[in-house]
Length: 184
Image (cartoon, rainbow, N blue to C red):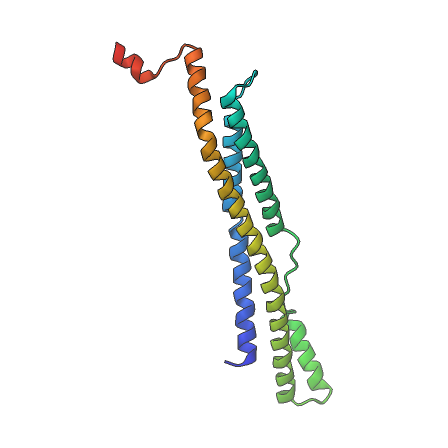
């Protein structure tokens, strides 16, 4: 494999990787929306005056919100601000080669110079795109870490949430539907 083929393959790999990374943004975004919806649902059960179960619900929900806001920040960083490089259009490159031939360069030499120029251009573009993709992948990984942290924290918040729900059902006179049906 010559240098041109290697540079072109690397460039095409980074273009495919860019596409994969862009598609990978949608899943964390959906998870963030779902988790924020869950937090809002949990926090709607909080009433004044606060008692211990509500305080133990608010605290992890607040920490989870901070984790999700950090995840959103990393997701935005993974989405915007990247300048990808692409080789010039083939028409411009062939015009450059034809100009070389018109100025007295042999066709063989002009094709060789075109191949060398394309090799350097593909290598430059592949390098720029690899750096961008590495940055994007790092921010996506950070996003995943913060989402996992939020899920774990919300799992801890489930206990006080269920206690508050059960207490409200008892206070409103609602009983366990299974227990009511068993008494009949």
